[in-house]
Image 1 (cartoon, rainbow, N blue to C red):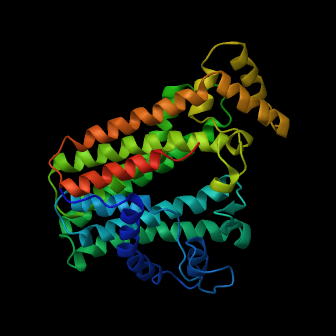
Image 2 (tube, rainbow, N blue to C red):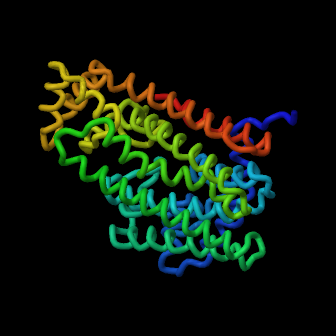
Length: 346
């Protein structure tokens, strides 16, 4: 068997393939929008000066798109359009999320809205969403996919984006709902995070014309991975090291988010969960109250349940890879990327 690359090498290979195509796509944006987007991507500073050797995150979603093409038997180049489209949609959501959450920093830099205002940030995100569809549809004109396969890929991305937006809307609604059970929380997270990762993990295969059973297995892998990823994200949103996450410890509590650890803790039905519910009903929590909430969530089992959920969903994702005939190396690299994503420290 061919030795598997280390996960950082796999992610770097996908970045090397997709980065020039991302730059080419961003060149299509209007001059009023492009500086904001290039800043967000880490390609330039707030004055428009280019930043050499910049990196915009780990690049997990683009890597999944490239690997999905390879797993289905296509060349990596077939997955590049999928990688670019997924990256654009993901960053559209990040720009808008920063507005929604009033976050002033992302990756230790001021957010787009905090520098240019809410209106311009919203337009920048909208531009990325529109551009993602153009990139997929243009893959047919570029000879990388048939018109039918490009259309199917665009439909998949549109449906995943709609599910992501619905999940985000539900997440926001949960902030004002006193009790949110675990099932509703997981349903929200399947849309907010699972849908786009499911799309990322199958989009390259769709462009390559893979059989339905292959596409469905890869999509299920991505959805399960998305739920595992979000469970870890929820843990980091409460207990994460601010130096690593770029956000204050306890930030999800501060914003009254009903994430998986909190939903699980509220369902414990003991005096600690009652105290937790009373604290979370407070409009503005003091820092000592945030610290108390963190203790209560852990005592009620929320931290343990979210960790178990992450591990269980990872196992389900890996099982999905065994349901279809996939190219061995790409399948193994998908599995390694999944383990890497869920192994983040929390």
